[in-house]
Length: 636
Image (cartoon, rainbow, N blue to C red; front, side, top):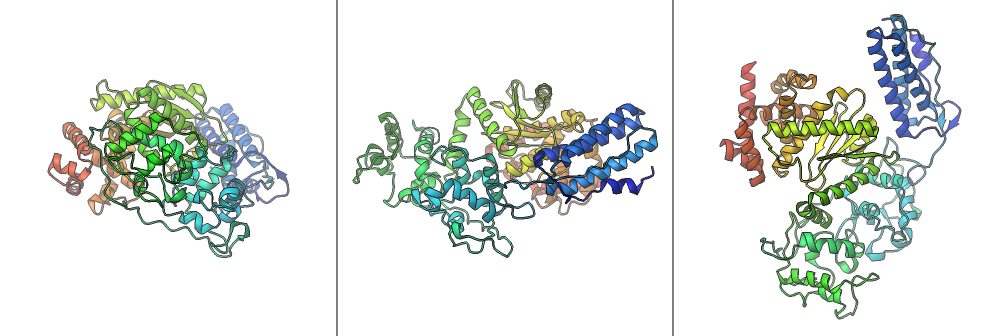
């Protein structure tokens, strides 16, 4: 159909027009622009079906969404708006030529948004990057200034950039590239800091997380200069360097054998986190002692070792808790004394050898305790813990939108769809979970020990924001959903907009299949294999689905380009190619279900995928990949 450049010209607006307005938030504006493009696609489909009146209504909805987004348009969305406006003009032309009666194309001119306060300061770092000088420094001055910027309470000093990124010998304040795992974020989110009880606004927490995710870059004039005197630098911002991997220190750590009556992970770690982390947590090494990890606790502090295995009363930790140490200082300071029962529990653990029963002595104690809790909690207790976690995660990702929460037997859904749609989605999730278990002979065992979380987003912009803020990555544009296995908080995240509802059964089967395989192997199979197996499971449950047909059509080209054959196992290929080849590989192994089941079981026992392949197939994973690729190429 003909296009009229004059109509496009009318809609191609210049953003910097005179006018001010607060308008909707950038997130809301993105959502309106997404709704506009969705309505335009709907209008095209309706016009092809000769449903002209409904097509006209869809165009009106697209126009309204554009007008809403244009009110105080955020400058970062100017190009997105222009593309949506051009698309509106194009569809208007095509529909008018097809016989749809439409009003003339309106001239929608965005108004410039009034300068809003940025996250913690007076502007960003450019290119969507958070500025340390303009955004992070004001947050630190306002929230941490009295204790840690102008002082060093608990041996924690944020006096300058170098102090912030280098941390102290017992721990770092930030983990470069991982905001949610950084102690400076954890103490804020948990409410431990600031100690005055004043909650840090969500937008400031998000700025801090994003700055760390982006590399904790410095854009000032001197990293050793005090924050109060810091000025914006003239050069390009430089990301902080990654620290060398931590190594165990001190004498060998005694490992639990299973016959102990007191568990460090379950019984002792929670006590230390609750009472000691404020002064001795990650980055807070009062007297040189940190309980951030078991390795650091084992190392001790300035006074030497805090623990003497087998000798509780001779251990400094017990002396401090009882107030019998030579300095007479009782711990924890400025907090209620521990009960004798709690101290006796720690003493019993030390007398039994002070053994460690976690996965890694270098993991944060919160992680060690979380895994132990998940393993030993009742399903009801673990479900409640996961619901609390899901709410905190949603608040971080989408802080400006209240979520609906709906539960079923095996799932907890949290998202921004209407509650009625969430309930329908949960019903579909239950059905697909049943199909997955039936296919893999799961019997009557529960899908997971406790409810699995489903994060549900009504628009892709929210899904992308979830990837950025929670997972620290950019989610591919064509991704409809993905699964993440973790014994503490396994979840599925999906986009459930109008364009994906027809695909939802297959999407759910794929992601739930991924989680099932990961869970059955206790998280010891590679991610690429679990994701490929999830696709293979969905292909068996929904063989005629358009998505599955598309996978099978695209697979031969991916196989032809697989060089070397095992490249998809190494993470060196594009995600879409890796996903397809992983699907084909897992699909091939599932041709003999018994061998596939043995592989999953072997991986859960050995903890090593290659060793599991050798045990079941008498071949390495590389050799299996070579045989599979060769067999597939031989068929073409």
